[in-house]
Image 1: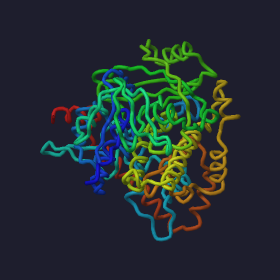
Image 2 (image 1 turned 135 degrees about the vertical axis):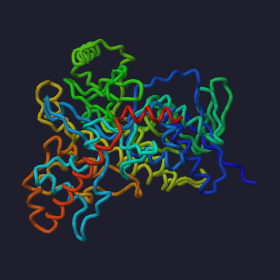
Image 3 (image 1 turned 120 degrees about the vertical axis):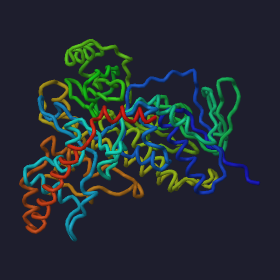
Image 4 (image 1 turned 30 degrees about the vertical axis):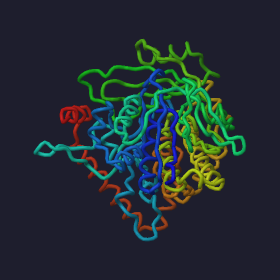
Length: 513
């Protein structure tokens, strides 16, 4: 009888448990004889600072049949329907980035470009956000649910929302849902490797015992304990184009009686930006800044001046912005912060973990002895391109009108990546299209126009004259787009009038438990 392959995830937390769940599901579906272990130590403290996701997280919950309301109850989660960008374009200017996609429910006429509604909005001088169902919900801090006469809760539309949560609670939640996953309470002191192939054969644990395995997932976060320390994986830095390199996390209490935001607040400051992520019971906050332009003491003073109150700082964390040149080396694959890290402006970390593990599971997961160099090369190329796209998207947020501090002047003058400049130059000649983005993730979601348009529109980076020329080529399409746009605005404003308040929804879900 064939011995089951042993997949070992090093590091629990959100990334580690997502990896374990996806591998577990995939080996079962593919009929691969395997067992799975997660190595995490109860001795290592974890600090929750508030985490935001993309809609991919909700897709993951549905794939595993996890009840969403239970998830809300057990993780203190709240809705994330988008991002509120404050003071980015210029001080005093705010725009939203709703994460739903109106094109999902309105198919373009034959021959029309897939983004025709976005083009129409820009041509008409309207904010593209207006036709999003989530936009009026964001403005009114409401949930995408209504309450029927019988008291039951019903979703207002087909769009996937995202979540805010305390990632410590989410790791524990996934651990509680594990089936057939062995938990090894230990820390890793080192590894043993095959002298010929270089493959890892076993982990050396803190009690000097060995945990033998066939394939290893490094989910040890910034430590990169396996793929970095033991396998010396080369690193590709984004420090030049993404110059923020420190984070100062802190918590703020939710004030009773005030409506809870359903957005991540990204608030531009003098040397970076501040986040506020509302969970049900408190705000996970932090200042992401560049130590070229601010000291920790100055950063704390700035936050306290802006907020008008003292804060209890939970640390000041330095980090490397960038990615591994290869996230899969030998029989070790890195996920989460072990693989890459970008400032958390667009919730790319957990999204990347989900997409990368689904990509691995769908296209490359098999008995470890059957995995090839071609598999590794192909996977690394796709994942590297994904993170490079994340970099370019985040970097584009810094193309603003701000020149009021040395940080902003330096970023504008010297830190915009050539790929971001190339795309923006192209989009001064033609409007962004879905086919401007290569599909390299096997049908899995990647950065494309759905996310770019609200940001480009909010920052004033789209040319109304270009959009008008494109719409004038087809008067019939222009009329159809106008009618569709106005219809969506009316429909979604009416839906928002029926929506529950965010805090009210969360309280009802708690009572249902």
